[in-house]
Length: 574
Image 1 (cartoon, rainbow, N blue to C red):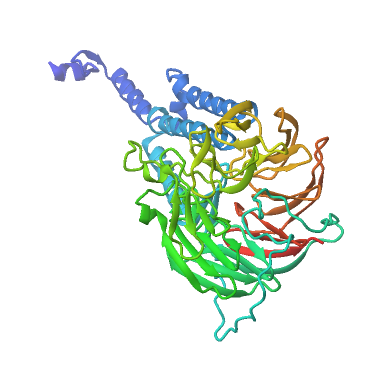
Image 2 (spheres, rainbow, N blue to C red):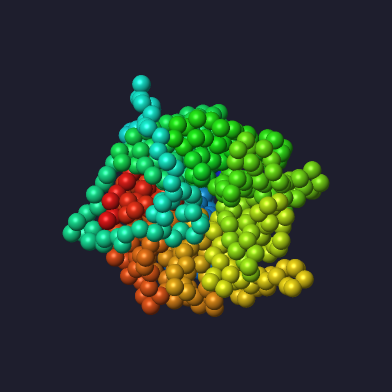
């Protein structure tokens, strides 16, 4: 039968039905052409879903552009620029992942095209990661990358062989000296000559520059000695330099290395110079007393180890306060109230606040020591040590550390860094913080019965959000960095006078009516302290390789000393 069909010009198809041979051949050719259709022809197939072809990527790209614009230029948050940056990363990252999923699983590209493209992207990403030597983040969570081909930082100075000690001089602290963090009163106000501002016509004169170890300490200057603390390999090093030449005079090292991924490597506090001694506190709790002239060790102890209490997330950052013969430090407590008094003579414990001994009883072992430094003030006629720790603001009896009063002021990060400002009436205290807390003015008074009362005059979460820096007070107004932008406010009402000038999370000092600002990117600037308007008088790059200058600068007799985690320099501003 089949033979008869073939003779008659018929042939059986796949279903067994007889069809004419030429029709059968045409159907076979048509099926082969359909299977071998080129890729561009397949894409033009009207049966293909437009959403899978081009709809999804177009929608995602429009969504990416719109959300990016909204986050960067429309969205306002009291949490600061770091939250905006993190939200940007989340939005962009999620959209990119969705685009990759569409490309790999929903698009009409061939498997070969998909695999080849993803392999190339993977290899490029791996190559970029392998080229990175180091990376860090600034105060707003911006990423800074150093590559393997970038020049390595220079090694810090070492003591020259056979170096002779200078002849001992009488220890005197002059009004123009800066013996402690932000000055002897820790208010950022410096005595000295008026600073010149003609930097454009006459650029600043660099007196010297030297490599230093990592860390975020400032510099204390008395006489010809400049003391700071830095990281050198596996040791913390307290160092003393000659301010005239930048040469290393002496160095004292001990095993300690603190590192935190976001905050970086090295010590955070500033040494205090008093009575011919240098007293320092390392990031891991090492308290050390040295002779200023020779660097000879007087005493040393690790208070965190001694007290068996945990370190804080970003390391010990409170600089020691020397009051008479007492060294006041802030190891912390689970609810603050963690000050401690040590003997300047031998480092023995003179007194401890109650919070230091509460870790054994506390359910939460987190340390609320904060990152501000203790300071000596008179409030409502009573001399006291004031500390703005991670739990809030408090005042303490300087002879025994007893807490006199406390005002709770906690943010989500437990980060209170700024030094409080006591106004002229010695009853009102201005405090400021970041992380959605803002600033407040408190009234602190003592009753006739000796009881203390703290009342809040005002609080504004959008005003003066100081993250790593401290504001200054001049002629009734406060000037400080509000999430990296300079702001002037009336502290009695909380009213904003103006907000202008981007300096990042830098530091501010005041001399006469001039704000001397070291910006986070290494610029040095002078701004007139004028509540009526913002007026930048001069600006120049002084730390050219900087990405995050968190080290407070020092101004002594018209000479400014600046440093970051790689180098230190001096400039004549007179």
